[in-house]
Amino acid sequence: PKINLNTGTPQQLQTAGLNQGEIQAMQLHLVAEGPFQSVAHLLGNPQQGMTAVLTKERFKLMADKFTMIDGETVPGLVNINTAPKQVLRCLPGITEEIALKIIGARTVSGADLSNMGWLTDVVTPGELQQFANFITFHSYQYRIHAVGRIGIAYAMTTSAETDPQERPGAMRRMIAVYDRLATPRPRLVYWKDATKLGMPYDPSEGPEQSTK
Image 1 (cartoon, rainbow, N blue to C red):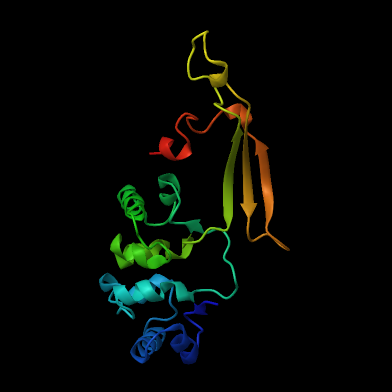
Image 2 (image 1 turned 90 degrees about the vertical axis):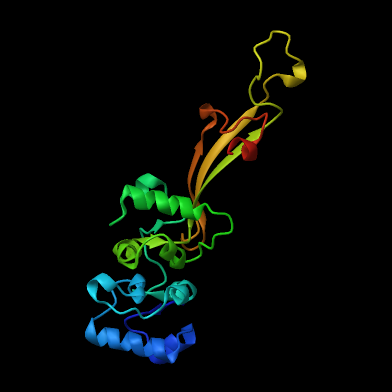
């Protein structure tokens, strides 16, 4: 389980991976500045005279080990790794420019998006601290688009002499939402027959080629 920055004991912080100097810096912050407002506040904020507890590189390693609340889940967070620009713009402090920078950075091949650390290469500590409490890097609800078809799902030519093997075949398109956090067990929470919407990709190419 993650450790609450404001209530974790020195032993818990050490077990999580902080060294003695970092633990002492945290304790000084709690005395001088009061409770941490977000995990991103471990980076400090020079503009506000706030001393950093962790360097950027250490933050990348440690960020996912801490939280601001007690409990296993926090409802209503936005997955910063997948949210479209329109959703990102709804978060505090995210401008059009920052939203585009985030989208660009997360599409880089091989980027480690497993915790908040990658955002330190995109925004300043002060910017990150504005929206840190509203984001996550994990998904627990999934939207599934399932397509089943026989042959080509619709005619690729208007010729009256189309070969029978190339004529449109039967197809079905389903949309479902799966919730991993549903209790007492994960379950489907939404199901819709979306066949009338047609194919979501060109059947002559396949889903992978058509998304390039």
